[in-house]
Every structure is written in structure tokens, then in C-alpha cells.
Length: 64
Image (tube, rainbow, N blue to C red; front, top):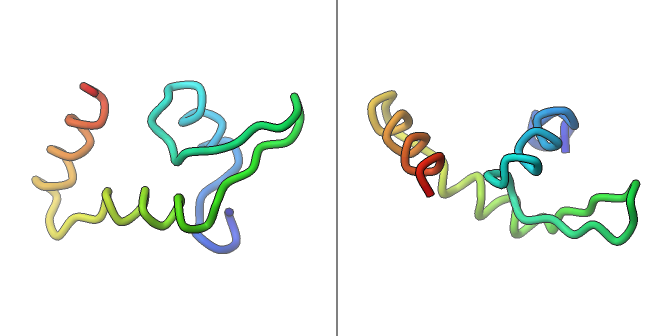
């Protein structure tokens, strides 16, 4: 993930705990898997053209 999308493992772990990260599968206690299509849809939903839009999307995501 970090190499392809610039997302660190620690950020992914925080998002998983909060429930606002990309969808994942956890087949064991130490393995977490992400589907590339799911990650790309998740990122696309968070794409913004200005900072006001980005702030609104972030607020909406935290309110959900």
C-alpha cells in the first residue's frame, strides 16, 4: 500500500480501528488484505478539487 498509494501501515491501522478506512479482509489475527479496486474506489470518493470540499468530505465521513 505505501509504495503504490503513499499510505502507511500505521495510517491503515488507525483507519481500521476508527472504521473509516478502505474495506479490508482479515483472514487471521496478523494478516490484513485489501482489494485494489476497493482501495481505488475509496480513494476516488475522497478526491477533492479544493480545500473546502475536502474539509466537507472529511466532516461527512466522520459523521457517518
